[in-house]
Length: 120
Image 1 (cartoon, rainbow, N blue to C red):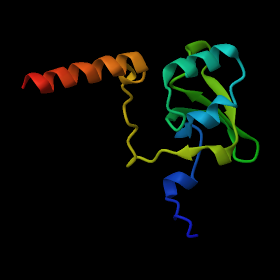
Image 2 (image 1 turned 90 degrees about the vertical axis):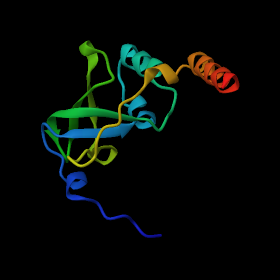
Image 3 (image 1 turned 90 degrees about the horizontal axis):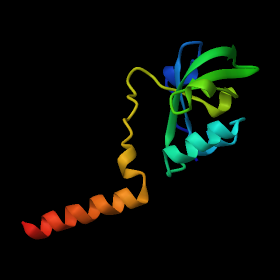
């Protein structure tokens, strides 16, 4: 199996750098119930990327990261280097549409779209 070559942005993580981690990996690192509940309610998809900014730390000990999706009072989480991926300037963070995450809302949107298609 061939490994993909890492870009320079993925290899260099420093303070102030934007990083990402999958929700399923971040959830197990959360300390408070408030953090866990906010992440549970945010997105259903386990492979969704959560973005944050490195606040302190180093590669040997790990980094303290302030994640965008967590509540203001509990934004910072300690994460080891191997769990993080740097977000380079060429990689844009995809905006997340929360309205399609709730299964009831998604079903309503799909039903409305079907009725519009049938009307045409």
